[in-house]
Image (spheres, rainbow, N blue to C red):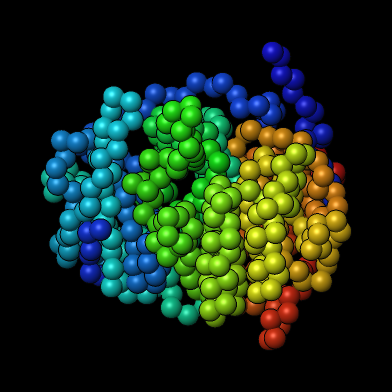
Length: 436
């Protein structure tokens, strides 16, 4: 089948204790060969930072090795410009989990750093005591509200090495001091594919080991081992992402929350419809006891869809009333392989401009769909464009920018709050027609 390229102008639419613990891609999933997975070795690979506990006082790290590595450790010290800082490092053992993919079994190791000092730069490395990774840095969160930025990415999913890599790398060129990265699901196309996870880790490379990742599960992180078997979460998910375990029973590390410098970040699981009500009960508890000035929620399937035939009414009925009741500021999604942003009315049939919750759907990978059905609620939409988003937060304002992977501003807005918590939205989206 011949796939034609669209003219560029037609691509865009619309308006320290240590504890072990672009080309238009067809709408259908393309049959693209992946790069063969790099076999695990003695040297640590796929090193990634996440959080299990308070980002101001803890940090988790996971990595992979071959199974001959029967001991694994992490070493941690306060970072210093003096290269001799490693002499002060402390060591702790890691917890190890075997994961088999095809004929290959690898060990995934997890170490936790706890009792850390807030707002402090640390250096760490991982290894077996003889073969080590390089030293990486991370900074703990401040205890009090303070300005910071983070990156938000929609689905990576396809052509991860060849095309999605430019999204994650462009985002960090634009926001080199970003404190974490939110992934709104479908990090890969096939959750059980070691090759695809290898591409994902390769695309982020050392960035994953320096900046914590905050992933939400998507439908492509679920699959069936056998044709008639129930869908199951990828066996790679929990061994390679050490995430908070504060969610409902049975949804560990797919539903979670944490606080970061004046923001409560909540991640939900849109792929378990039988558990929507359980998540709603848990969600209300996390919203009710929230003392942070800002609240952001992320999950895969949208409350309001941007593409035809992808509406999820059950999800909307279960969760949106709570977003309205407790004044959630921003909800981030993926899934639709298009872009949409707006402040919809409760039924999604009209737009609002009175400081209601802002909903965003985005895509960072090359698989894209046409926009459809979003005209009633979205003030900015776009098709066939790879994007990344940088969100900058201070006690006074939340500033949002969506940019193409070539760096052009695609959408922007600012939320402010008065002392009573009433929001005001300032729309700063650019004129796309004059830009293309």
